Image 1: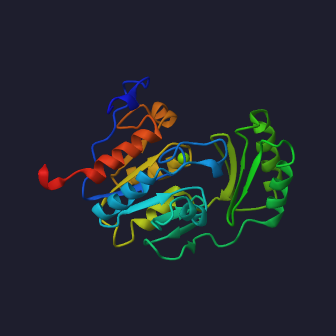
Image 2 (image 1 turned 120 degrees about the vertical axis):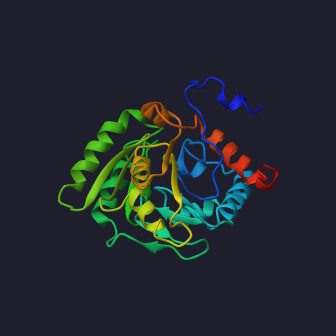
Amino acid sequence: MTDSTLTGQPAALQPPPLPQPNWALFLDIDGTLLDIAETPDRVQVPARLLDDLQTAEKKLSGALALVSGRPISEIDKLFEPLKLAASGQHGSEWRPVPGAASQSVSEAPLPAGLHAAAARLGNLHPGIVVERKTHALAVHYRNAPDFGSEIGGRLAEAMSGYDGLMLLHGKAVWEIKDAQQSKGTAVGLFMRQPAFADRVAVFIGDDRTDEDGFHAVEERGGLAIPVGQLALKRGRGPAFATPAQVRKWLSDFAMHDETAA
Ligand SMILES: [Mg+2]
């Protein structure tokens, strides 16, 4: 059973050792902890994952944060009743400690004109899903793959005339976000928090925006752990083949009894 998650995956992908007590763990959500679904609202959160995240957070003395493009309000709905330390909207907002209110990092909300332009793209095809956030927006086209380049082109056009924004291309999604914030700046904020400071920063992620997090941890002598396709692209170091493998690893960590070692 243990090896079944590896079946059909390239032998080169070696999962990392279980977390050390001095790690600070940064976890992307979609495609890392959770399997990607047809639409972002259809992801499944296994009950077991909630328990394992909570235990892992305790074992790391609070040095665990979720780092996502999703708003924190949505992260909280997914992981209810947990309110873990988190960064949302690609670094534009964060919750420094578990249970606290989320705070804006970005200064200004995304201009209304851009939300309007994105909403119009949603009318191109029923498979296009527009996700409106306060400091970002996302246009998903997993169910309308032929529209990918048109969406990207139109968003780029709509953005001209606005400063300080960045267009990102992820897995079947285009996103507009604050150019000043990223998953990397999020890591920087957390590493100044008492629970995280002086620890080995470890970032696990599966998509391009996670590479900002990877740079931030590697800059600090930490460890970047890619998942899936991103692992094949990097081709070095420990990696996970699938979100199921990441969940198994967290679960093994949660169950692991250090005193027995
Ligand atoms: Mg992801």
